Image 1 (cartoon, rainbow, N blue to C red):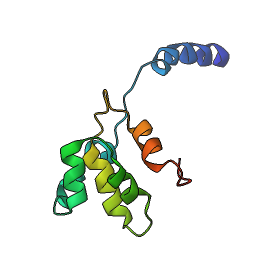
Image 2: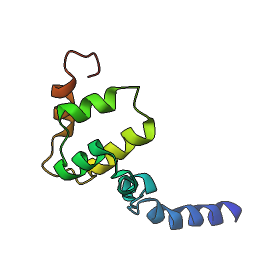
Image 3: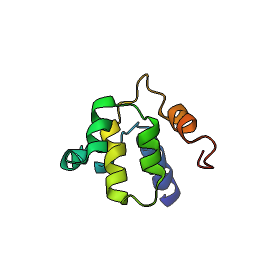
Amino acid sequence: MKKILTLVLIFALIPLASIKVHADSPVTSTPFSDAYMDIEIVRKAGTAGVLDSEMAGYLSSKKNPIDKRAAVINALSWRYGGKRQKLSWSLNTSGSGLT
């Protein structure tokens, strides 16, 4: 009887395992770069929306604080449709050993 109950429970829970869920993170859904708009490179990233060589250099420099580098990334936006940020990063850091 216990085996039958276990099997019924397992088969009842199988459909739940196939439900598609969407997770979100505050890091990706919160525009925290708004708090850093007094920094020129963050404003530029927010306006341009596409990585350029100046931003790539800023992001790759350990001299710049991590929170400000994260703000640049956040300002570039998570809406990446049509943008080729990885290609831009590769082109802008080629020869630097960062690709």
